Image (tube, rainbow, N blue to C red; front, side, top):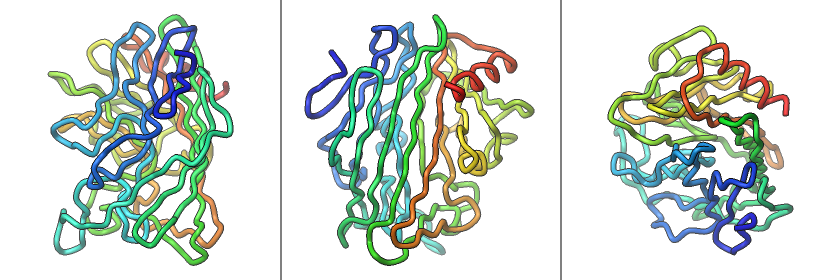
Length: 284
């Protein structure tokens, strides 16, 4: 597949090996907040490191960008956390619709997307994804997203945390990793374990499974200011927190941009090697 140039998906390659499929359009039910996503993503040896609609969270769709609250509209999928009510089934789901590719090929793409909800288009996104070789056992997935308020009025982005659920500030970049018999190990440059890492800022964060490791690097100053959202014991997943302690306002025409580079590794590198891979991936 040469960059898969079909209308519904494309395949990313590193050193002529397929490492990720990007679903551009998919027939998902509205409750899952339909959106483009990467799945399967694999190591260079072929180990799958993502999950699509697992039984524990059907709305987890591999790797992508999702926000649970855009001015009250759910672009994450599943139930909406409502203050003083908890997780609630609401008919408020939005969808991300592919508009066009400015560029696409086996090493990556730049895409324009429209975030649509009942009132119409709320956000216009420019998403850039690139796959780069780092070594014989590691490659990097570089994902940048830029969300622009196109409504002509003020918008704000929220999370379950800003709506009253402590510790649940997910929203933005999100990677649902493959679930194994044992939970993955989680560590940063100076902390170990889910509880020590979740909700804190770090230049990079590693999630290590049985035969694979994902090293997530915050690749610009704005992304480094966002705490990481981390899950390990319940399910394996890592994401950013655009709205951690307060809603993120977007004035008309304003854009919020974030960049996360993820190193996909065969094996279990130690802390120093993970840090070196993160630095190398970001610098490229």
